[in-house]
Length: 366
Image (cartoon, rainbow, N blue to C red; front, side, top):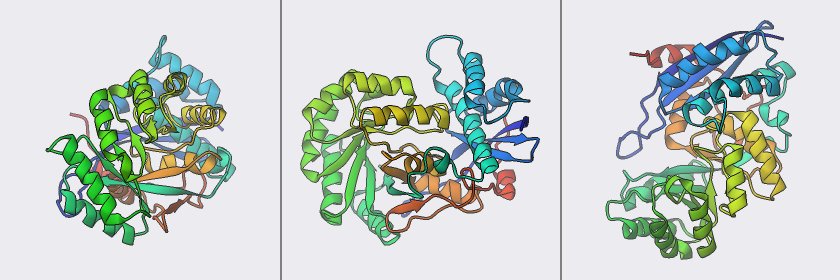
């Protein structure tokens, strides 16, 4: 089996939050399609940052290096591609995003050729993953947060993540929002918070103290740039488990987190870190250090597979904006049932692109 063609296109979607009607974010996708001489077409994806730059890297620089290669030779291909995007040092940023969408497409091909899901290729621990929903955006006031959360409960959700560092009233209002949600949903609901790397260490420490009695499942990306040293200081001073890895979750970064004792939960995202090949390395590191493996950052259907595939996989993320994108872009996606998502029955990542939507959402480069 040989790669015959690689395509990368940028697509833009209109995502809206309930009640307030404001944008829900995660509205841009780079879609990579890889074709083989045996008729398999693999789908990969990256998201958000400098999308036309990412698509150009894939199309103009990475594609020529993989034409004629067997997509199953992942180590050979990754060795060749990493040398193209960075001949020294750690590959980061749009370079990793370009690797991500191409690598994911290769995994999709391998699964289709083998008749197995990517979750099965990774180890096949489960055919589903328990999930949480990212919903608590700053656009909602306290009562709207509760209204949206209760609607999500009616749709089968049991675990909820809200953003902090977003309240106009500062940390005290952030804490009040968390407390209001806890009191409204009761003790049975799981609640986590995410600062999106927005807080200096001292503010992250203060906020953690304010909400510790609210039974917070984890505090995600709490400090600026996820500095491993600052994370370690915060971790030593709070009972709330810390998590990280959404944006720079390659294996070298997680090694730093381990070496500094920075986090409790590994959260790689294959749309940003170099793809499923890199996530597999992170997953094995998590197993070696007995850390749970989760997902964050809009990985959607792709990251569901690593959570289901590995025995230390815990929770997959659903996201109000990402759900809208995936329901539009793919002909069918799994829906939450009683707090869990099932891995699609089809091989690879188990999804098929809607060609009409691909055409209608195409965002041509200026």
